[in-house]
Length: 67
Image (tube, rainbow, N blue to C red; front, side):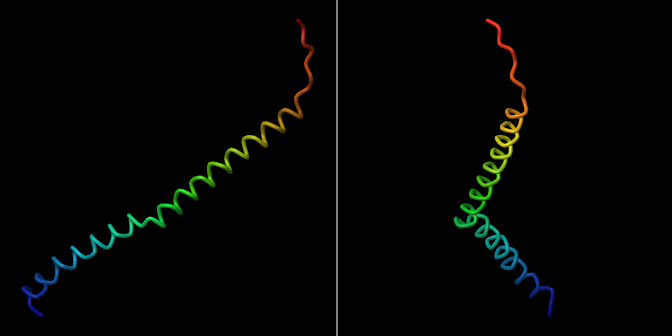
């Protein structure tokens, strides 16, 4: 194999790998999955915060309210 043959194959190969990576990043199914995973994470954090707040509310003693 000569250097000229390698050079001829190099450019198309590099162009092909770049387009292959671009096609993967714009996959609509992967984007929807990422959005769903992000939303599940947000809801999990919100549930954890609400559970802790509810626990604090039940432990908090009643205060004497003065008017």
